[in-house]
Length: 607
Image (cartoon, rainbow, N blue to C red; front, side, top):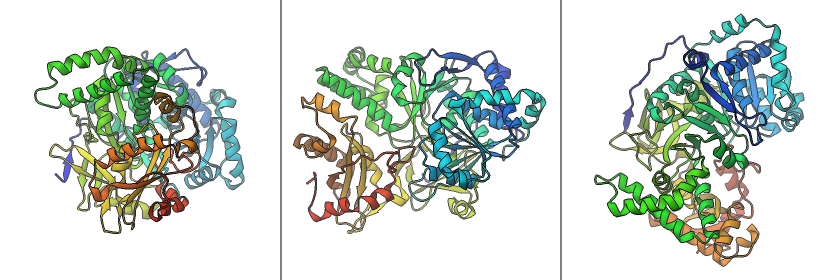
């Protein structure tokens, strides 16, 4: 199959905008809890309940403050912060004031801030901390149109509330009704793996039509009584932003945690019913759980339970289902292992939405087997996050699901995935050339490669621009190998190389967080990452991981040699984007000597 469409489930009034989503929530369930927050975003709690009506009143008061500070309809206003209540409040207040929101990652450099603020013509920037304000100050002289920088930790939100006391409510009511579906709601700068970020313009319609249809499509995940989610991904990323908006028409409760160091305590106290994350988080949860089991002398029990979970999940997809013996083993494993894992996630999580990279069938089956159904999806900034997603009752593990209601996916002759639907952006800000290049006869060209099965389920096979062509002319998609090898508990990142080379190789970094647990589980004394990079037992374990990854591809596509890098790839050192994608071109450039060493015999590790 080369093309598949899903019919729309909800028709949207063309006079609508994002503000109507909140108005409808207040009208239908104004006294119901919409958000739970903590006075101290980094503190232990308690969680304070905020009804939809109370949140709406807070939005209006902050919106009035923005008006008092000179924000006009259509003005671009930036937010640079971690994920916290104030971000969501500012988002909705800016839309209520008629402004266009420009998110900035809280890890951005001064140069990145300058580019975004200049390109988007940001007139006001709200940052979280004095540290962020200092970053902006480095380039403030080059931003003549930036009127002010407000700091959340210094009372910016409270100051806005006070400043708006003299603004009439009628002005906010008027501004809330100005935008139509085609008007720009936000400009999100793609983190990009090469070049300067492009500003993807997302409209009110992109969010309104997509979220209303997604609520219907995801049904029991987001709309059942008591549905609640804890947001810990950065709100500067489109995935988290989509869920932030989705929660309003879905009627579920939203909470935030700004630091993943507090994630487990916050999960335990907030107790979400669904979460969203990237595969790397699911990998780390699995690996850390295995290591804890090993440290407690229960490694064999965990490995048996994991194998049972995977087998049980796979059996669910067969006509006969799990057999009696497997059901008994699954019940026992549930009491010994699975219940503890579910408790660590808060005790009532039933669903997880995964995106950003391939999760892999092994982890997908493992989590479903323990009672956490992972709905893997696919999308980009330019598609307002999801284009396809597995749904309750329509799931195939190993795929990224079927198109969302009202949208379609097709596979171009060269294998590229193309998307059409209400979630697709109208174009890049001030970049007509890039916009023209991004579309093919009205279909958005994703740059990813994939295939559709007979039921319309999409499977991602690689990135078009990342296809490696060996010296022998073999085309290799690195993502298949990278995703599998990165699941190894000792490995942090993998970059597969081999363009115009005689065989496929890989650059590998060790995970400093995973190393201590692995050493403990294997009865080894502490060692540094540098020491581990030459340790025979560590290398033997990685060799097994390479062999396991190679089973997914042909001999010509397999990793023949690998090299362990002396430094990890992180957001801080510029080798990862904020959504944890590798900046491949930068890695290949900066580690050219290491790549050459793979092919001249000076190899650390590998065969």
